[in-house]
Image (cartoon, rainbow, N blue to C red):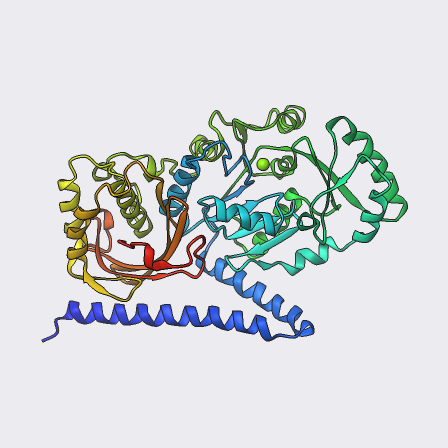
Amino acid sequence: MQTESESIEREQKGEYRARVQSESETQREIESERETESESESETKREIESDQVRGRIMDRLKTSARLMIVSDLDHTMVDHHDSENLSLLSFSALWESNYRHDSLLVFSTGRSPVLYKKLREEKPMLTPDITIMSVGTEITYGNLMVPDDGWVEILNQKWDRSIVIEESKKFPELTLQAETELRSHKVSFYVEKDKAQAVSKALMECFEKHGLDVKIIYSGGKDLDILPQGAGKGQALAYLLKKFKTEGKLPNNTLVCGDSGNDAELFSIPEVYGVMVSNAQEELLKWHAENAKNNPKIIHATERCAAGIMQAIGHFGLGPNISPRDVTDFLECKLENVNPGHEVVKFFLFYERWRRAEIENFEPYLASLKASCDPSGVHVEPTGFEHSLWDKIDGMRSIYGDKQGKQFRVWIDRVLPTQISSNTWLVKLDKWELSGEERNCCKTTVIVSSKDATVPSDGFTWMHVHQTWSEEVTNLKDHSSSINVF
Ligand SMILES: [Mg+2]
């Protein structure tokens, strides 16, 4: 006879399957609609889509975000001098385990969508909730990167891209950047440091004569960007904050993070906390000394890049700032607020260390892991094969240290826990694995339950794990060569 717990478990699994199916159907529908729509229909549809995607992000946050991080990418979130990407991976584990479920991650970059996507393929980066690209001229939402059409309308005011390009041709000091960097509301050049100021002044006069209202930003000692006056990283953030405020969902705290000249605007927004990472460029530090020296809400971190961001979270008391990746003993790892997101992050970190042979005296860990799995729990592999969770844990002995001394990293993205009963959560996530040159991604769903709904600090029991290969996989055409253990 079927016990009550068995029937609950079946229902949960059934519900989970239905959800997975319905979400992938929605995704397929959006994609197929995109292919067939005519141009005239596409604008209206895009507006609706934009609202839907925004809605989905905002629905996740029933109330104001606990923390909104708005970070520049190059030399701020991403350290190009850290080939192992350790601080980026640490930040990612911290974000997914402690913040993803109730906070917002915003990337604000000078990169165009093309170069932004390239960076995401090269580095172990998280998916932000909102992406601000091309120096604040493009705002998109979610993984599908649906554009904000309201922002486009604002930028069209007193802007004419063709006049900007024509007039700029009269200045031989300017070298036009690659086609991918020329966007509808951003025209970019290279110019030498000593000529930048004079050229900018002359350009401004020229555009004024044409009735245009533009903004010229010099950044990184070489990039000169011409944008509509209403654009820029600062205004894009101000626009978002205004939107949130109208909806009554202004984030409780906002932390802006940057390293160079085009980030200065972010630090000018009132009420936000700011961190200039330790490696910030002279132009930003100079701006700060002249404009915001006495603002206690802005710090110059002593740590580089993403480590500087985590330092600022701690400095301003915005929430936990110790990444589970930086905790050496998982068994000792206790959190103030235990949550299912933290549980899955911890497991996949363990899995990485296991294969890298970074766990000494591993028997107690293995025993603890097995004890946290339901005896009837099942793992469904991407191939479709099913194994009991206990068998999978036992099977881990054979792969201990198989990646020792090799490049091997595991990180998880887009952790989304949903409570499906008083003590059970369905956690969806993308599990990424980097092994040498190969990189793959598994869409993973985990069902965990806690013994006591009110005090889940006792830990979670793993009931079910289901993985499928993601279509977003890069550098890996054929999955047959890769072993997916978890
Ligand atoms: Mg930068």
